[in-house]
Amino acid sequence: MAVSLAVSAVGWKYFIYFFSIGYGYSVVALAVAMGVLYYAALTPATIALLLLMVIFGMRLGTYLFMRERKSAAYRKILYGGDAPEKKPAAAMSIIWISCALLYVMQVSPVAFRLMNGVQGSETWAWIGAAVMLCGILLEAGSDAQKSAAKKRNPKRFVDTGLYRIVRCPNYLGEVLIWTGVMLSAIGAGLVWWQWMIAALGYICIVYVMFSGARRLEIRQNAAYGADPEYQAYIKKTPILIPLLPIYSVARYEWLKA
Picture 1: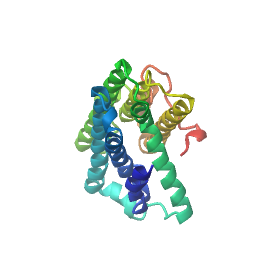
Picture 2: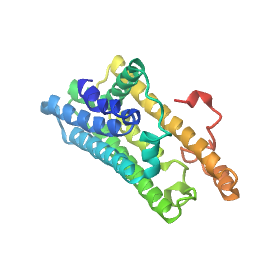
Picture 3: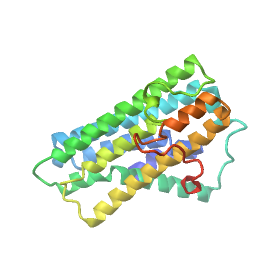
Picture 4: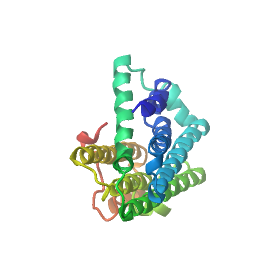
């Protein structure tokens, strides 16, 4: 928790950093911390899980940082007239601690596997690592495809490549990453309170992804709502989960975060 608080404290500079740069690099720092704290318990599978966390966090944190540096519109949101008002210190403290705690809970399945030191089959750890890798590739590929599409036509919504499968494939990738982390806990000797912490972290990050999809949908509806091609696209393409016929979450106020 101390490591997570230290890294995510970058959000005190700009509020959005709690959820963006602070998120990615906190996961990196937590993976390194787990490797150091539980060095004697490391196995090939847990090393793979920790390395995948580092890759995920470094890619995401660096991508978001570079997007801010290169995008004038994004910088305006952070620093310009469109930037949200600075929140009171008490509110900032609650958000900081909540974010840091969430990141700890998200990585906790791997921490508990190392902490419990269960010897035996690591099948589920390897399965979890494989799912994580698929999620990382999906998230990175989605971000790259969207950047390329926006360079070709900044004023058009993206409906090509991975965006033909779901409208938020990058968020789907994130869900897969943390699903893999959860799967890695199977067979690791977790007791009930460890399962509760791990499950709460997983539920929260899935909620955050659906909340992010809702915000994106609202922005896209405002920007492209009058476009017949956009209307046809959103009516046939699920918003987040393939084959799950959820095409809109904009009306769900309980997803507002």
